[in-house]
Length: 113
Length: 110
Image (tube, rainbow over all chains, first blue to last red; front, top):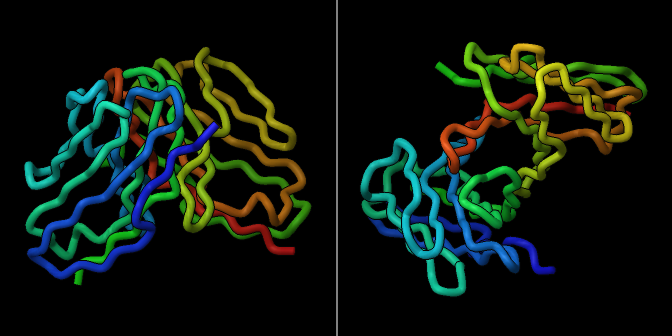
């Protein structure tokens, strides 16, 4: 059984640039959620995708957007990067829309300079 | 204001000691989860507690859900260096959103 994988593992971008982060969900899972974890904090919910549709969104501006593909993999896009966007971005997959058991990837560490 | 308040935020103890960390809220939850996160990794689910007063054990780890389902605790007996990590509690808000506490960073010194 393949776990949740994220790419890249580390990334450095300049303020104002755009970034795309990728996530492959665990085999058999149709739901992907994205979280932002700032240094020293717990993860914060960005949004969830279920069967290619956004299925809930946290308190993040529209410059955070996403996609889910027919194979249930997902992308997180962030436009107009700000210094405060520097964080660990985590993807979690689950077998249903109700996140009773979510499996997290190792994360992408994004640094905005 | 954090929905879930974890305490302490940092804890450093010697191998073999016992410890308890707490997760508190003023809200009632249908369930609460505990995760452990190691550096460079994503959180890994340890346990889900569902019923008020429920106690679950995972080897040397004991998890308890408060009677009123507003708080939870994690007790570790005879801590080992392998227990070092960030311990996070989380609750489901709506069907899809996990809300996390800020975590307790635990260090077990040999």
